Image (cartoon, rainbow over all chains, first blue to last red; front, side):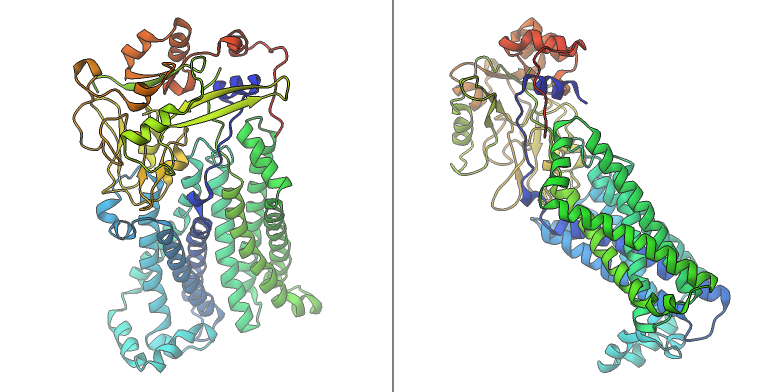
Length: 358
Length: 215
């Protein structure tokens, strides 16, 4: 604990400054969350496509659906994150001209902008390649629904032909997947955006907060991809089981990290940390904190049980019957929990007391 | 950097009249209801009749390490080499509020345009008025005295190059500053009534009757 804070506390003069709520309206937690969800969706999509190529499966294989839903989650997540953060800014055009204006590369906002923008572009390319062209035309599944929209616009033939003409060799696409996957993991920057703020003990945990944000966001992204796939395909095969298990493990890692971080805050005697602890346990935010814990715990249990059963093929008939609703429900809850984590982490934050006494 | 400018505050001399924050608003032509670049907080302890209050006047401290400058994505916040004053280029600010997150003193404010503005140590006048100005001059060299210093009735606030401010501080305040008190961002006189208590705590002794925070 800083010496200055100790002196102030010992004297009993404590002035606490809440950062005004308009410094971080709801758009900020939405942005912090969706950016990592996009990363999770991309990881699910890229790995599913690689699995499909490796196994050389036929059109209609579930890997294709996972890939398309994953890339769609990535594109929509990144777009949502971008819109959310732009809506928070006072001068949007300067942010849109980020190569000119965002020149401070020691700022996580600058670094994060580049990560999110490049990830968005790669995700869009991967989504288009998976949705259009001769190969996609021979495929089926609900994940191809954008083709129906494009067909209604009368552009399907044009788009299929265009994608076939510009489709790069597989090795290039694999390269895109690798770069995109690295950027997906780099969405950990959303945690660093908070963790470097030294005046807020709840955030200033440079390992815990970034890992908690990464694990929970990736879990939500992969989990959302799984939920969409099983909701439309009504099938929980070993491939889906692998992603289900991964979601459960990521949820478990999130739970451990969040629990450790909040325990650290609870044991800290810094006044701002104590105030955050009170906010997390004794105010309306406690509902959100419990939602986070329950969502992560449920996703952990369901992910492990259903995932292992699907992978080993040892699930009982009852388990098979409830697998789809269990996955959709628990992973839907996981998405809410991941967003709730960011909201409570922002709203329960408090700056250290003003220190000018002693 | 030639020499870091900084603020000095003596809580023993502050009467909590808010003349400093009003003077700041007048100098910089800011609306009466605008957020203060210089604020006066009244800290208290105890309950009546054992109640004490002490006023604290604060602003941007033009930190030597300027956390706001480090996080500002468009490089709109500049820690000037020539005098250490932290200025804002509002033509680059995107209004992301990240500087407010990082500031230990709650100094950044945001106007109707959503752009950041704060104390520029009266280097210039108005929001962003300090950006691009030449090196800060002391009053002896023809520079303006900061409005808050000018109008402080108890001479509780001072400002100037570090060596000059240190020369005017008490030995105890200067010594504590050198030891790193307040992150070496501002020179503050110890409260006279509690100076011994503060020293005891700093030296690791358990203070008698210390009040601790309980949430």
